[in-house]
Structure formats: C-alpha cells, structure tokens
Image (cartoon, rainbow, N blue to C red; front, side, top):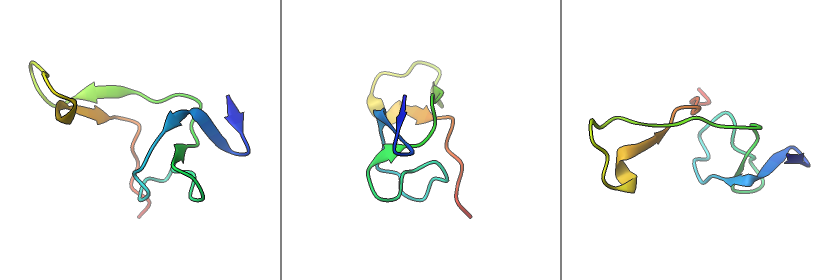
Length: 56
C-alpha cells in the first residue's frame, strides 16, 4: 500500500533507481520482482531487484 507516494512495506536504499522515494529509503512501486543472477543462490548477494530502473 502506498502512503505519501512510498510503499512502507518495501524498504530500499538504491537512490539512483527511478522508483526510489527520494526523501526516504522506500520504494514507490506497489510490488517488486526479486530474482537471481546465479544458478543456485546461497547468499543475499546472489539476489537482484528485477524491478530496478536506472534514473538516467
């Protein structure tokens, strides 16, 4: 649920993402997709936010 333009259920510190709530460390999307770049992920470093969009 979005509150003041941010989803308080999704914390995020990636401030160069288009969907980052600039004033707070939250995402502005209603939902995100989490994936992996590994065949057999075993640590959090193996996971990725597949909803990320660089704010170019």
